[in-house]
Length: 438
Image (cartoon, rainbow, N blue to C red; front, side, top):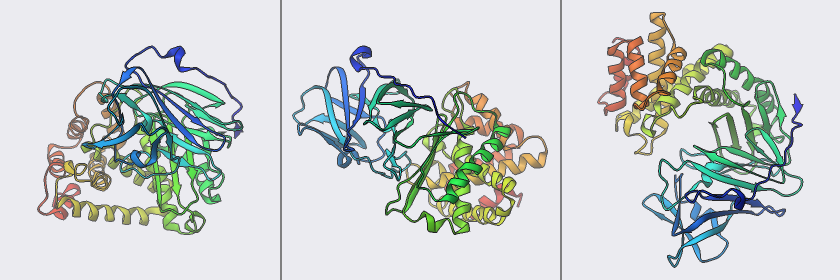
């Protein structure tokens, strides 16, 4: 492994390139004292800014306007940045709280490293004039860091400051002094404070999982992916992982990882966690979003969990009992949830967890049937689905189930639709019927 040598200073000032009046310029300045200041600037006076992502109202407490004329308000599940007197403005600055904050079914705004570095999720910063519409999908961002720190954007290292055009779901960028490392598979920014067992696992298991999924779902397109692994080492109890385009990120918001890594169940959970996130990386299409709406999340979350199970069984056969027990727990969890409402309503009911557990059972049923027929498997089905989803505007779940029916049977897909669309009177029986003819 070689330390990245490529360092580029690329600085652009907003006045030079701000020409589109519909765009909002976003800048972040970090002082040498560690204070984060976020500034929004528009080319014409506006009466409010809205945000693309609104999982809760936590900006009100964590983003503080630098002058008292401004405030963030929460109206009908949407946060807005306005002037208190209702007048227009072209520029507003806020102080940010750069600590970890769990957001339900969204990426954490900040994932601190144990040495003071920070991973920041840019999608949390995206703002729009008045209201965010589907056609609003470009933002100009800049960031400036103190001397001695650098920025990693899209796998490249910058000193001082840099600017770029961001889009879609945004990305994670690293700010700090720890040097990234280039491996055969990834550019890695792994927290030096992580326990040795976790670092060794990241170093060996991530490449192994990437090779496994590449052989089955195809090579990743574009630049080499970046792996971020951060450890806040504070009093906490949560961990989070995720993927964005050419990025995998994992965060542990704990202070007892050294104790936890002595427990085999925790280590197995960690490998599953890694496998799920790497599976997401290889599910993705380079040509657009193929995941669908929130209520269709069983499609990609359940798929990633079933792929994690398959990867563990093949690469780590000693985990077979762990995997079997986990699937049984998923079945019980799914059964309990679907006795109250259909799976399609889980997002609206605040039960996103059911998309993982019930989704795994759906993909397991499809995969077992495909293998029995001896034609294809869950990997080749996904590759075909991905190609079709890139072409059309149909609902992603409809495309997937149409392909599944073609390769399995109408009867199986009808059973799956019952799980997705119906409140089940006998969930245990229905879920067992997914994988048997009883």
